[in-house]
Image 1 (tube, rainbow, N blue to C red):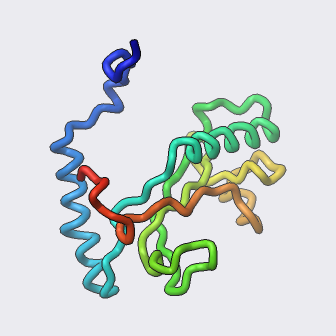
Image 2: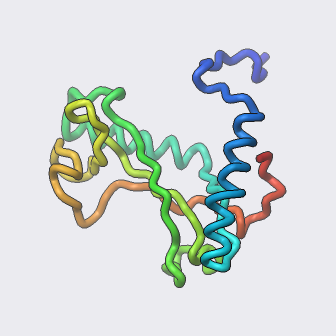
Length: 157
């Protein structure tokens, strides 16, 4: 029998729900309110990605990084989440109602000299983006589901 209590959970991954709510409330009453007022929009306050998409992204990072450096350690790889916003007229693959709203762009990172640099593992180099310069294309993840415009009924916080 598998239920949620049968799985071991790292104490590092447990956050009191009161703290989560406080953090979300702080964002909504400060940054989100300022953005909504200054841009005269109802900006997104959450972005959702399905688990297979996230797992695929991590697998791609690991596979491409290993092609460049067979000795790369998992502990040297990571993901940086950039806050971003869609343009006033989003590209055709992005819903029009996402215009000007927050999103996240996820970029792989690689540790170099104890610093976690943005890293593009599809480039044939073991250097970080800071060392190598910005490429034409980069391995990245974006286009999650935004709320709003999606229904906030699914959110707990």
